[in-house]
Length: 317
Image 1 (spheres, rainbow, N blue to C red):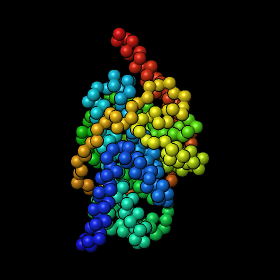
Image 2: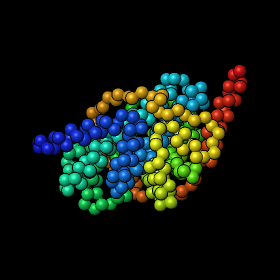
Image 3: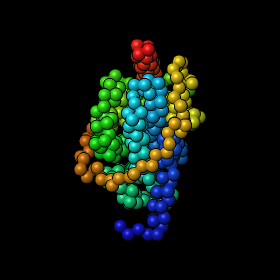
Image 4: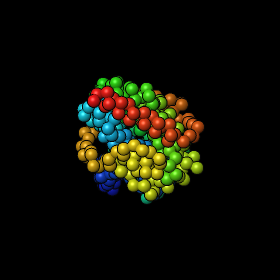
């Protein structure tokens, strides 16, 4: 496609802004949320900011004593890179889409033809066109969930290094089996809402989890608490951000930027996943889930992890 000089300038602007905000987990989380504040009709951006907070929590958890003693430095580095690579890749794909929508509003016409230059899938380009015409807010949320989970499937989940050293490793499989990981939405009341994340390497299950999290987050009673927390609590990457509001007597993880450097990612030649992966009907369906406060059972599991670690240390001594 022959682009005008103005279009070329738009591409440079979007590329520059995406790179600026794709520095680390903190900058990504903030960029998603600030975008949602400016464009609340793009509900996925709020969901992405809250899920990105959880990615930060998982990164800094790796510096807590049970992890530092049960996983060696190489294993923890690989786990961190899994979270970081997926977090970076999703942002690099999604944020140009968000900025192109913003540009479309500014121009008062759809500018989604520009997305080809960012290797956006044809599936998602079509979905933005549909959204522009129909303003179906919830369909766009589902579409973005489907798209971004497919975006990371080949370069992260199925990539030979991560598959061999992370997703089939004993620590990962044990954590998955015990369901130690959860995506949580914190509140100032101390309640934690969310769901346990299990079988993360399964594409359809990740999409289902994403839709379930959206269902929870945008439930009015939860939404107002979550948006209040997101507005007033600066994201540091540590669970300390919300643990100060709940009765937890466990060590707090350090702030993310005090322990991790900025990672320089090598981009890849991106294949349009929608050209070779069929869109399953269930992917685009609504997903309802029973809303539960999961803070107590989640922290019981974490307390058990610390108890196991201390028992192991006692036996060693």
